[in-house]
Amino acid sequence: MDWLYPAYTWALLLVPAAVGLYGWAARRRRADRARFGHPATVQQLATTLRPRRRWWKAGLVVGALLLGAVALMGPRWGTQVRTVERRGLDLVVALDVSASMRAQDVSPSRLRRAKNEIRTLVDDLSGDRVGLVLFAGTGFVQAPLTTDYDAFRLFLNAAAPDQISTPGTDVGRAVDAGLQAFGASRPADDATATPEAPRPRALLLVSDGENHTGDLNAARQRAEDAGVTLLTAGIGTEEGARIPVYENGRRVDYKRNRTGAVVRSRLREAPLRRLARSGAYFRIGAASSALSDVPAALRQVGASTYDADRFADYEEMYQWPLAAALGLLLAGRLLPARRRSPSGTRRGEGRGGTQHPG
Image (cartoon, rainbow, N blue to C red; front, top):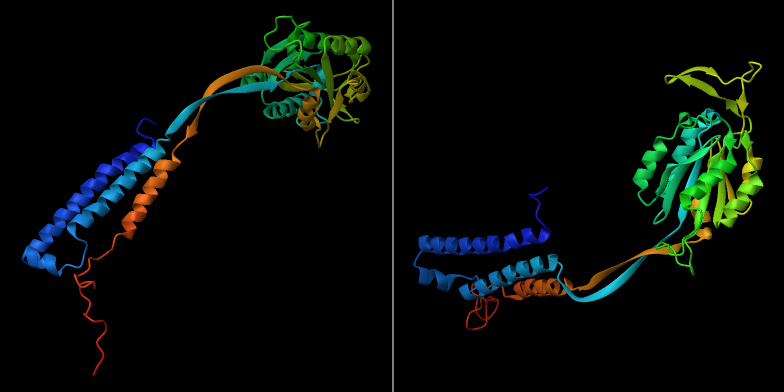
């Protein structure tokens, strides 16, 4: 809000306020003495500080406030140029949006649970670029590689089975779409990676593994040739569940086969494990999820420097005016609270110490 000033501004405002307060107190004392009696006589009887010492004490307090305000301003000295490197890798998430992902053997459904787990995964990333591929019987790039995680989440929220009309789970198409998101190969003039330290790339495929088509070995080989590490995550249970059919947002039936029997979808881990032979496999079950281990697996894949920022760094010097302000306050405390008489005793005390009865 515009009316909120920095802390040092309020401290600076205290300086004239303190000066005004001390001035008002001095005028008030003079007025009280004038009402009490003759000013010279009252001054002789007074046991407080001499006027000059009182002004010295006020000056020390005001000076401490001023130095405190300077300390709050954060004074700096010197300039040192520092370089901060940004390190990370490229991660493409390939999400299965086939009809079987509507099964509810994991709550609330396989697809919605997968999206929740992916959101949590992205929250744990830092400095990595992430992209999104949707696939079923075919695949396409839903979100290109980006470090804008909020934009990635928007694309992820929009993922739905009706975005791909081709049925099935073609893992080979998913891998090809993932390689498209990365780029088929690294150009020699790629600004985000150097020949000595190429930017690591990983493809995380999230699926129930059911009704898969395509050559898994060929898909894995294409990924390895492109320098992409394959990670897979299986979602669902061995018991499986029926696949609901929706119309206008309402469930009207369950998916049936050609004979009219209700189809039961189950998690198929074998193809997913085969695909991730060179990477790692994670399981998302009804009560637990291993997707939280993906960041650790990505760190094993590696990271490279993709950007570097240069900025000027300064040495903080606030401690010096702060120490001076404390010194002034201490000096004000050390000033004697009452003035002494010429004989060395405080006014108001008996001469020669305590009187004893003779």
